Length: 198
Image 1 (tube, rainbow, N blue to C red):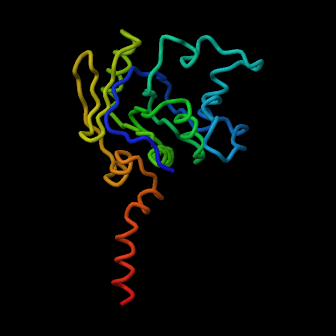
Image 2: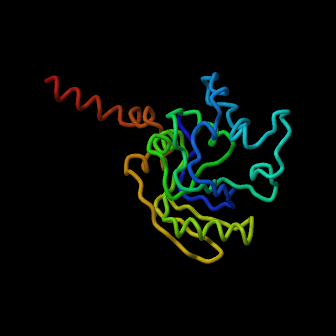
Image 3: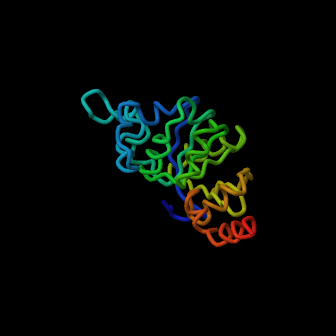
């Protein structure tokens, strides 16, 4: 399944300065029954977002209208716990295209890139600067430039580079998942098969 191409995003961001956010907190296990990648955004951070009677918790950031945007900024060790793909699905379905943290669990990081979410790892110092910028102005703009591999806090023009696997980078820029990538090089695969069978 192809996704929207990711090149440069400039957006306000939603701050979630909590460390060790695991996949069960991102999408509780009771919501994993569906197999289509749709509707999971409604239950993103379900137990943090809603009371037992399904009323919104006013003090949770996703219920605060002053915060919005395509970027989620999380604390250290984001996406730990079980390997469920549904955690990435929920984040994407809610509308986030990028998650910024100082450390990601490897499986969550890969699951995210496989469906069009860019996980950006920055230093703890730079992460603190992002949180501070959002605290000063909830609509502070953050620019994530995938081709240049740079994150910029627009209000201060502070920048930091980030690393990404080259294959995953190309797929995100082209809007490909792994299957799309293979389809795109179908002719090359056929040529290789021809050479090796002759």
